[in-house]
Amino acid sequence: MSHFAEIKDGVVQRVIVAEQDFINSGLVGDSFNWVQTSYNHNFRKQYAGIGYTYDKVNEVFISQQPYPSWNLDSNHDWQPPTPKPDGDFIWNESTQVWDEVS
Image (cartoon, rainbow, N blue to C red; front, side, top):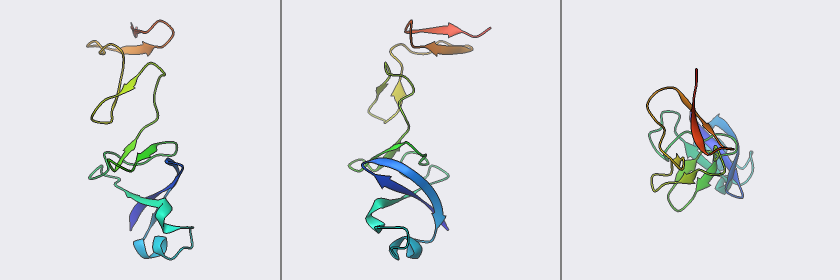
C-alpha cells in the first residue's frame, strides 16, 4: 500500500492509503489528480498534508506558509525574516521579532 494525495488547483485535498491500481481504476476520480507521497519523506520533499501545495515542476509538497512575512527558500522551506535565536522562542508576526518563551 502507498499514500496518495489528491491535488486540485495545486492544493492537497486529501491523502489516502491505496494501491496504484485502485488510483488508476478511476474509482476516486481522474488518476491525474493523484500524486504519491512518502510517509517517510523519501521523495517529494515531505509527506503531503491537507492544504499543502504541490509544486509540479519541482515535484515537491510544500507546507502551508506559517506567517505572511515568511518566504519560501530554494529548498522549499519557509524562512522567517530573521533567523531564530538559540533557545525557546516563538515568532511574533505583529512585531516581526522572536519572543522568548518563559
